[in-house]
Length: 193
Image 1: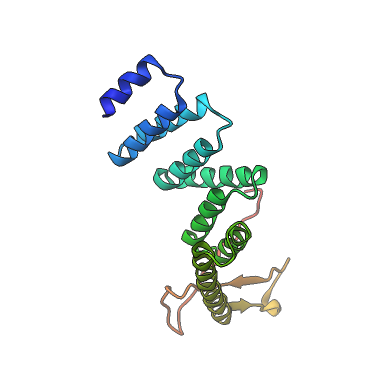
Image 2 (image 1 turned 90 degrees about the vertical axis):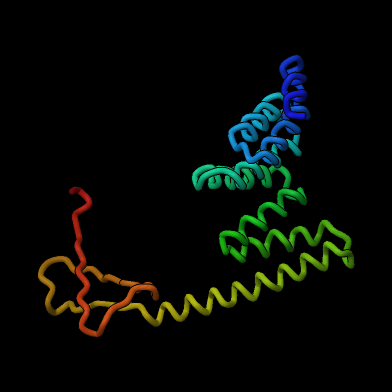
C-alpha cells in the first residue's frame, strides 16, 4: 500500500490528500519522519486547507519533542484566533490543556465547545462531565497551592544587613527533605557579572 501510494505521489506530487494519507500511514507504521515530512508536503500544496493545518498541528503535538510541542501549541492558538469556533481545534486545545494540568484553559475550551453542540446530545454530556472533572482537579490544584504557601519560609532579618537589603521568599518543594537544623545557602550575583 505504501509503495503504491509513494509511486502515485512520485508521478503526481501536488496531491495534498495523497500526502495526508501517506502521513497517516507513516503514523501507523510509527515512522515519525515520514509522517511529518508527508504532512508538511500536504500543507505545502494546500496551505489554506483547515483540515490539513489541524492534522499538522496534531501530529506535531503527538510525536514532536518539547520544543515542537510548544511550537504546535502556538500554532494552535494562532489557528483559533482565525477560527475561534472550530470544534476540532477546541478539542485539541482542551486535550493539550488537560495533559499540561492547565485545567482553567481546558474548562474554557470545553465550555466554548458546548455552544457548538446539541444541548442535550451525547457530546454535551461528555463535555459537561469533562468540565466537572476539570473543575474538581482545579480545586485540588488550588488547595495544594495554598498548602504549599504554608511551607514557604520568609527571611527578613534586616538588623544584620549592611548595604542594600532584599526580601527573599523561598518556597520549599514538598519533595525536598530537610531537618530542623538544615542550612540553606543563598548566592546572589550582580546582573552585570
